[in-house]
Structure formats: C-alpha cells, structure tokens
Amino acid sequence: MRLNALQTDHPLPDLNPENRWIAVFVLAPPLLIAAALTWQLRAWRAGITAAAVIAGSNITTQLIKLIWTERPELIDEPHGWTGNSLPSGHTTMAASAAVAIFLIAPPRHRPAAGVLAAAWAGGWGAYIYIEAWHRPSDMVAAFLVVAAWALAGGWVILRISPPHRTTEPEVDADHHIGPSALCWVLGILAILAAGMCFSVAGGWAGLHEAADGQPWRFAAGILISSGPAFLLAGAAITLFASATPRTAGPHPAPAAQPSHHE
Image (cartoon, rainbow, N blue to C red):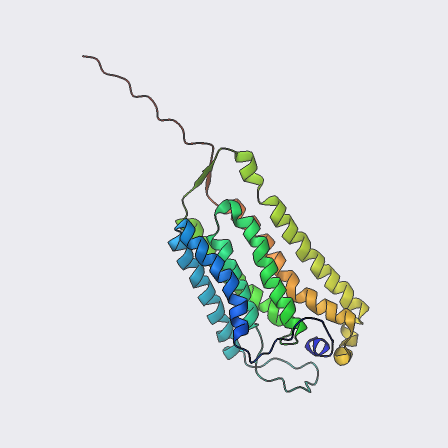
C-alpha cells in the first residue's frame, strides 16, 4: 500500500520528512485553540488533563516504536524501509492535539469539536499516506493510541466537571445526535468504500502489484488512513453525551422559610 502511494502522482505540496517545521504545522493550530479555550473558560484542570493526553499519546507511540522494532515484510521494499513505522508519530500528534480541543470544550460544543477533531486527524492521516510516509495501518494504530488516552482523559474530565444546567432539556439531550451521526456515517462509508476500492484493485491476490500506482488501491489507502478517525470520534461524542453530568431545568427556587411570631 505504501509503495503504491509512492508511485502515484498527486497535486498536493510535497512534505519533506526532514523538515521539522511540519510538526509545528500539525500541532500549532489545535494547540492554540485549546490554549485559548482553557484561558477563556478558566478550565485549568481540563487543560492540564488534555496536556497529559497529548504527552501520554505521543510518548506511548514512541515507546511502541522502540519495543516492536520489527514488522513482517510481505513484499520486497526496494526503497530502504528501515525501523518500525507503527504507529505514525505525526498522525499521533495531529489526533492528540485535536482531541485536546474536544476535551476542553464546554459540553454543549463538544460534539462539534469532535467533528473538527476527526477532520483534522483524518486529514493528516490521509495526507501522510498520500506522501508515502507510512502504511495505512500505522495511521490506524495512531488513532487507537490517542483514543485510549482520550478515554482516560475523558473519564478525568467528567469527574472534575460540575453538572451543567439548561432551561431546554429536550434540546440539550439531543444536541449530540447530528454530529455523532455525521461521524458514524462518514467513518462507515469510508471503510466500506475502502473495501470496494481494494476489491476492484484485485484484493489480496493483487498485492504483489502494489508498486504500480494503482488508483483504486491508492484511494483505498487514503480511506483506511482517515476513516477510523471519524468512527472513533462518533463513539467519543456518543459516549460523552451519555456520560456528561447534567441537571435539566433551572435551579429550583428556595422554599420560603416560615416566619416566627412571638
């Protein structure tokens, strides 16, 4: 799959793997938004938790690379493939920084933040595959590492967040349905479309032709490298919407105290 991307032309700007500024492009936009949210909402504990999720995700990815230093080579790599590429470090950066926004955002805006996080993470996953830096499985592994840390960070966020109140309980109860459904649909369609593209390209039997620039296999790689981000975002939005503490309706008026007459 990676060799197929290597042999396929595309109109996007080339990414130089030696350019350290690419990490800044991946991290800076979501980190700036997360920092601004933390400052505006005075959500210091949530910001610290999100920072721990980012650090934990990226450290875990690097540890996995160090521990699992070998992967089976299904075909000959003529381009000097060395070391372990799983999980993708840059995809981990993109996904963890985007998840920070999701964790820090107020409950009512968290579903929309989840959609944006999926788009940012999935977009970089697809771009990194298109540039032939990684195999699609490397991006999927990165999404799973970040999802595990986000689940732990989300549990902490829910424990430290006070219940929020709303005067429109019926709206508040359903505000996550649209964003979560969008993520689920996009993720499922991406995986189904990837399977169809892979099948048209010859399936498993055609893998020995991976370096021929086959467009259907190229499309399958893009979809596999991005679709799981939307599936995991849909799951996160649904989980957080059902688990977020809330109290419907306004605060009840205090009961009148009886007057005491002498």
